[in-house]
Image 1 (cartoon, rainbow over the protein chains, first blue to last red):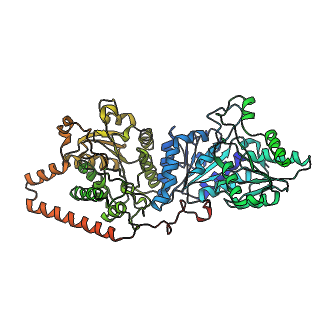
Image 2 (image 1 turned 90 degrees about the vertical axis):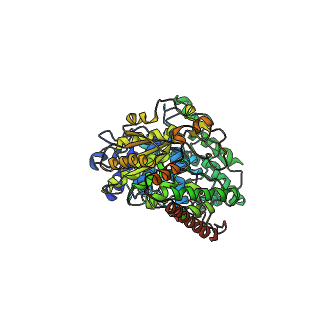
Image 3 (image 1 turned 45 degrees about the vertical axis):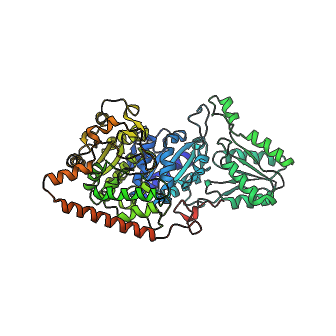
Length: 322
Length: 315
C-alpha cells in the first residue's frame, strides 16, 4: 500500500471528523460528491453528513464564520481553494483571529488549509507561498509540512491546538510524494527534523524545497561533500535551537524557501543565526528564494523562478568554497 | 438611553480633561436604536455591537465597570489595557469584541450561530450592528450573503447616521434606499425612524422575534443623525445646517423623555431622580476604575497565543 501527501491530508481530516464532533470543514467546493478542487475532502461529506459544507466564494466571510464558530467551541477547518485567495481573508486571519486571544483571553482554534506553492502552468494567482506573511503577524502558528507523515500528523495536531493555525500544504507534493503508511504520531510542532546528516554545510528549508535540497545533498555527496538538511516543519514557531545546533556542526548555512525574497522565513533564519550564532559561522550565511517578480505561467519561466536543485547546488558549491 | 447619554457625556469630559488616552467614540443620537438592539436579546443570544452601541451593550448586560475600566486603562478591565475604548467585549459571554475593520463582525456572528446550531441549541438569535458606512465594505456584503446562505437566525441593525466620519451619504452609496438591499441578500428588510424609541422597540423587537421563530435573516435600517463628531477629536464642522433641520436629526433621548412626560407615564420629579441615579452609578464606576492599577509593561505577559509551548521566542 502507498499513500500520497494529498491522501494523508484527506485521511487526517477523516480522522478528526471521526474523533472530534466539534470539527467541521468549510470552504469552496469541499462538500457534496465533488470533494474539493484537489479532492482533499473527497467522500467526507457523505461520510460525515452536515459537517463538510460548501461555502460561497467569500474568503473573508468563510474565515469570519470559522472564527465565530471557534469562539463558540467548534474546531473548524477552512480550505482555501488556493493559498493565493487567502489574501481576501487577510483581515479576518490577521486582525480578527490573530489578535483575539491577546485582546480577549479567548483563543480561536481555527485551522486554515492553504494549498500553496507553484506547479507548472499555474501562473501568478494559483502558485503563491504565503507562509512569511502569516508568520509576520502575531497570534498565528504557521505549519509547512514537507513529508506525507508530517502532512498527516501535523494536520491532526493543528486541529487540536487551541490557537489559529495556518497549515501550508504544498500542491507540488500532493501526488509526487508517497509513503508506505501513516504514522500514529509525529514530532511535535515547533521541532525541526534533521532530514539528512552532514558536516560541511547546513541547508535549512521547509515544504517542497526540502526535496530539492535533499536531491542536491545527494548530488554533492558524489563530489565529496556531506550536506546536512534541516526540515523546519513549521516556520512559526521556528526551531532556532535545532538550526543553531546544525550550524555548530557544519559552520556554513544556506536557507532555501519558495516565497518571495524580501523579508520572509529565510531572512528570519539568517537574522537569528547571525545574531545568536555568529561565532559558529565560517562563512556568511546565504539564502535562496523565488525571484522578486510575480510567478510566471510558462514552465520554462516557472522552473527558473523558484529555487531548483541546479540553483541550490550552485549556491551550495560557492558557499563550500569560501 | 439615559444611562448611556450620561456615561458618554462623562467620558467626553474625562477625555477633554486629558484623563483618557486614545479616542472616545459616542453614540449620541443613536441610543434609541442601540438600546432596542440589546433589550430583546436573551441569555445565549449573540450580540456584535459597534462603536456607537453603548446603549445596546448596557441593555445586553455589560457592567459599567467594563466601560470605565477599559477607557481608563485599568488592568482589571476585560481588555486589560491591551485594547481600548469601544473594542471591548466578552466573547465568552456572547458579547463579541469588534475589530475596527467594518463589516467583519457579521460573518463572525454567523459562525457563532452556526456553532450553536451544530451543538443542538435552540431558540437563539444573533444581532450584529453596522452603520451605513460599514455597509459599503466587501466584508459586509460577504457576511450578509453567507448569513442568508446558512439561514442563521440573524438580525442586522444598520443605522444610517448620514456620515461616514465626514463623508455624506451621497458619496457613500448611490442606491435609492439601503433597505432595498435586503431582498438582494435574501434578508427581510424594514426601515424605521431611529429617533422614536417606541418605533425602535416595535421594529427591532419584531425583527428579533421573527429571526428567533425561524424566518430568514432580518435587516433593519434606522435613520438618525449622528449628534457628535466621529470621535471626540472631531468637531463635525462638516455637518450642514440643512441636515440638522431634518426630522431624523431629532435627539432621540429628548423625544423619548418628552413622550414619557406627555403621556403621563412618569412625573418630572421621577425623571430627575433617574438622571441623578444614572450619574451616581457612573461616578462610582469611574471612581473605582480610577483607583485601580494600570497595566505594567514589565509584568505584562507578552504572549499572543494560548499554547505556551508553541510560542516563538524572538526579540
